[in-house]
Image 1 (tube, helix red, strand yellow):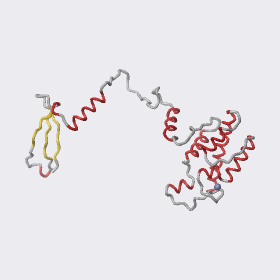
Image 2: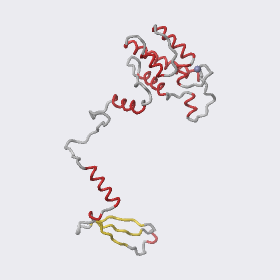
Image 3: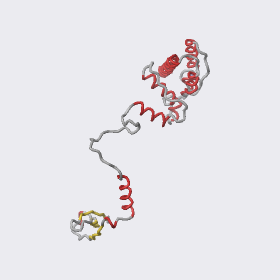
Image 4: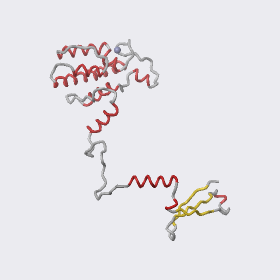
Length: 224
Ligand SMILES: [Zn+2]
C-alpha cells in the first residue's frame, strides 16, 4: 500500500501540518484510513529541506527587481544585444579550439561558397570516408574522381589529381608559386604567407573557395 503526504496550512498556529495517509484502491474506499498529523514549522526544518532553503536564500540574496518590463538579454556579449558576430565568436571559441586560425569569411564570394569552405575545413561534408565512419554501408569508399584513394576531405580538395591540377592553374593565373598542400590549414598558411597585397589575398582565397565548391559539385555529378 502506497503512502503519501499532503501539506495543510494551520491558520491558528501559523504553522503547517503534514498529513500522512494511506492511499487505497477505489474498491477499498470503504475501509477506514489511518491518519496521523505531524506539525512542521520553520524552526523545525532540517536535513535536505534546510539545505534547500539555505541555497534558495543565498541565490536570491542581493537580487533587486527593477521596475522596467522583462526583456530578452543576450548574455554572450557585454552589450546584452544579440549579434551574429558574437554568436560566431562563441562557436569559434568552442568548436575551433584545436585549429590555429579563425573562421575565414570572404565577402567577395556568395554566402553559400563561404559556408561550403567552412564545411571543408571542419571536415563535415558527407565524403565517402565520413559516411563510412558513421557506420553506413556503401559499395566503395574510394574517391569517385580518381578511383585510387580513399575519399576524405583532404584528398578530395587538396590531394586528388583534379584538385592539384586546378590549384596549379589558379597559381599560374594569379602568378604565384604553387605549393603542395594537404589540408585546409596548410592551404590557409600558404595563402597568408604569399607576398601579394592583402586585398589580392582575399580575392585569391575567394577564388579557391569557389574552386572547392566546383570540385564538390563535379564529384556529385560523377556519382549520379
Ligand atoms: Zn581522387
